[in-house]
Image (cartoon, rainbow, N blue to C red):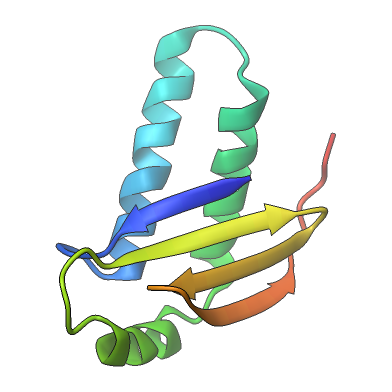
Length: 99
């Protein structure tokens, strides 16, 4: 799973919250189960509850001097990788049940 966050207008924490809220709205509005959207929601929730956004924001300030800034969140087999503008800023294990 890969999630792209646009960081031109908001910090990574705010953009993660916005993606989380949009995903909740889509899931509730669809009336059906979407495994991909559900997994995305779990990952975003994990990020909001567990990441040190203060540390990530301080790193992002150095990366975000240009336009078209983005964070890429990749999750594969329980491992999480977050990069900002192509520079890896976090790697770790995701503690989310796979159901």
